[in-house]
Structures are given as C-alpha cells and as structure tokens.
Amino acid sequence: MEPTFTPDQQRFRAELRGLLALPQVADELAAIAAVPQQDRHPEGVYRLLGEHAMLAPDWPERYGGRGLPATYTAIVQEELTAHDVPDTVFINTIKNAGALLLFAADREQKMRHLLPLARGEASIAVLYTESEAGSDLASLCTRADRVAGGWRITGVKRYSVKTAHAAHGVIAARTESGITLFLVPLAAEGVEVRRLETLNAEPFYEVVFDGVFAADADVLGPVGGGWFVLSAGLAIERTGIDYNAKAARWLDLAAERVNAAGDEPVLVDRLTDLRTQVAAGRLLAWRLMERLDDGDLPSEEAAMSKWFNGELGARAARLCLDACGAAGALEGGVPAALLREAPGLTLSAGTSEIMLQIAASGLCLGGVR
Image 1 (cartoon, rainbow, N blue to C red):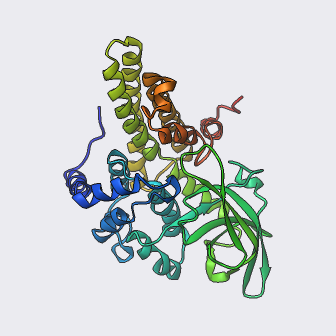
Image 2 (image 1 turned 90 degrees about the vertical axis):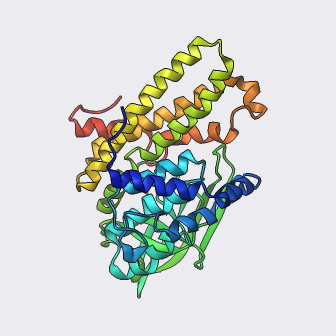
Image 3 (image 1 turned 180 degrees about the horizontal axis):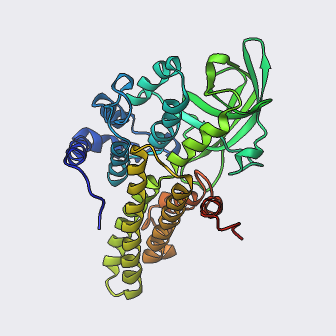
C-alpha cells in the first residue's frame, strides 16, 4: 500500500522527474562521481531546480518557492534520492535550516537569506552538536556573551557535514537567558573550520568559534528562546521522509545483488520483509507530512518515524553487504559510501536511543532502559 497522492502532487512529481531526466543532470552526476566525497555537490542540478522554483516548493514565491504545502518538498526529497542526487546540502539548507528561518527569522533575515538558498546559490551548515553534549542540546557549552552592538561567541561544534561548502552556519549557543540561535558567516574573523578524519561517507567538520562577533541582526528568533525554536525544527527533521527514501533506494541496490545470487532463499526472505517495512515506514512518514501541512506535528510521533526509518536504512545496508559478502564489498560490489553512511542514519537528528526516549515520554510509558 502506498500513500495517496493528489493529481497536483502527481503532476509536480512528473515535472520534477522530467528535469532530473535531462542529459545535463546525468552529465554532472557522472562528473562529480570522480571527485573526492567532500567535494561532491551537484551545484548545477540544484540551480536547475532553483530556476524552476522546485528546490524549496513549500516556500513563499517571494523567497523562491511556489507557496505549496510541505508535502511537495517531501516529493523533492524522494526524487533526489531515487535519482542518486547527493542530498546533504538539500537536507541541511532547505529541510533543516530553511525550516528554521521560515519559522523564526524576521522579515529582513528572510529577505537576505532565503532567496539564494531556494535558487541553489548558497547553503547553510547546522551547528548544534558538541563532543560532550551529543544529542543532549541542553548540555551544550558554546556560549554567547553580550557586548556592545551584539554578541561574542566562543565554543567548538563538531560532526557537521558539508560545512566547508556552506557560507553561513546556524549556531546554538548558551546565553544568560537560555539557549539562543545565531546565523553567522563562516568566513567571519575568529571562525576556523577543520576537517575531521572519520569513517563517515562524507567528512565531518569541527568548527571553532574564538570570540566571533555576531550582531543583534544575526540572532535567529528570540534571545533565550532557542530551545523552543529547536524543538519545532527538530520535529520537522524527524518526519523520516529522507531516511525512508534512502532505505528504499538501498533496497533497490540490494535487490540487484539478491536476484543475481538466485539461490539464496534467506536473502530473498529478508529482502521481502524489508520491502514490506519500507512501505510501512513510508506510510508513517507521509502521514506526518500531511499532519505538518495541517499545522500539527507531534514530536513523539516524529521520533517514532525517525527511529523506525533510520534503523530500517541501516538494515537495508546490511542486506547489501550480506548479499555480496565482505570480499565483494571491498572489491566495490557494494558502494562503500553506502555502508559508511548507514550507521549515521541512527545518529543524525538525534540517536535512536533519544528517539525511543521521546516516544516513550510522549506516550507516558516511562523511561527507556
């Protein structure tokens, strides 16, 4: 069973698929496949979608969108993944940071930032995580101290992706009145972006803020009101659409290997089972997107979807590995990037353990042990 799509949604998806089927898209994807992982960003594809107001279709027209419901951006997510278009910048910039800007930015901030983002001309890094805080944003140590005309930000953020590509970062910092969000240029004096060596498919970065000045105009939302803004933004991140799309795409890759094996009934059974779960996860994620359109997105249900679809993606990647064996993976039988990316699905936007805790708390089930 699949979600039910309206005729307008079906026409939008068909239009998007038509753009992604253009030869120039295939040419750019082939070209970036030969460059290092940290440099893989299909800027031409993003600009193409931006020219047709299809990169951020749920944004108002004056900011580069079409003024459509949020479900249309979910269609973009699914089609980017299905066509193997790298989506990290889309997730960071449109789905995550863009949603925060639409929710919390003032008019001047929106006019300054949203149009270049929707056109595919700029990107934003989301800088929340710290080594000692992890998924517990209440424990973050980065601070912003009041000075004449603005703030001085001091601290270290880690494990962001595509940070070297981004012009700005959304930073969560502690102020006297609580957590506050800032939108700061990453080329500002006192900012240092360092690449970290990890097993993740895309490089993680560490960003050091050494007394970086942020003007009052760079505060995103109310001073001390960052926790409320983040809570709303994180719920949007956790609908599970992107995780489910990846799981579905990875199962397609797994199916090629399982079908090639032919005589492995255990693998066929696992593939069938996971396809059923992907279908269920898609229904769950789309139900949340429809509720988001209606202005209602329960955080505990979003956590459930993120947990289910994130763990599902990891299992799909494991099936790919088992279908070709470790030797085949080392020889390129399974895309190495897939196997390296999969564990991150259970960590990004909140670990699986945190998602279970939120779900249990929302359902009054007590703590998760």
